Length: 312
Image (cartoon, rainbow, N blue to C red; front, side, top):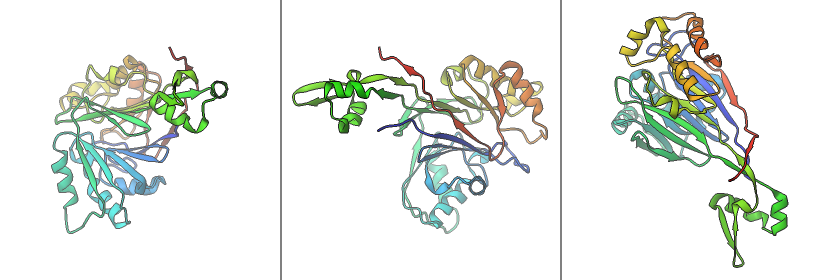
């Protein structure tokens, strides 16, 4: 029987541009049951995986927001380590225009050889990708180079009423087929999913912006997200400069979270100029109280949604 997934976020690195002790470069792992996804891959990401207890050998998909060094230079080491440890399964890497050349260059550094197949997808902004238990949606954001924001959206789950199943005599072993296709023909009779449905559990949603200035499309893109991980490079007093360099302030990120009706905002991609991040957190909380600092190696589990929505 199809059950709601376990979804866990692990912040592997939360800094931007330059690392500093306790603040590695951008990398966020999001695990959906047995499917491990990585969003950006800053230098040293493979080491951060080892510290976190999350096995990078189970990686299925890597999503690169853009090809500035702090967001992808961890790829050569990570990809070669996977090969060194005997990986044979395919790996998918998504990224903006230029991804094919950037990834090719990354995997041909030195004399190493990759032992598995890498499928590189150059993302056309606005494209969605069906990855089984979840869908990835994409948005072109506003940085200084081509850059993509990603939304990981768990698929809605139809709750089955077993009493209705028994009443109409529908075979239990074909329930997943009915759930998947919406209808099943059996002995000359057509059965509809609505015949046995109790209601729908809405899937959960996590949005990762990558580096971006504030964009008017972001609140809609992040609408009702359980978690928004937003570029918050500097505090509000630095907005003219931070926007000039293609980033957002904590206050501006909080405004997107508020307009989008998200449940929780995690601040991310901190400038190395900050030793104390409280100034960023205070900026954000003034606008959006459910704002939190992301910390290196911190893990956050997304609560399962038990509320049922009736089927119209």
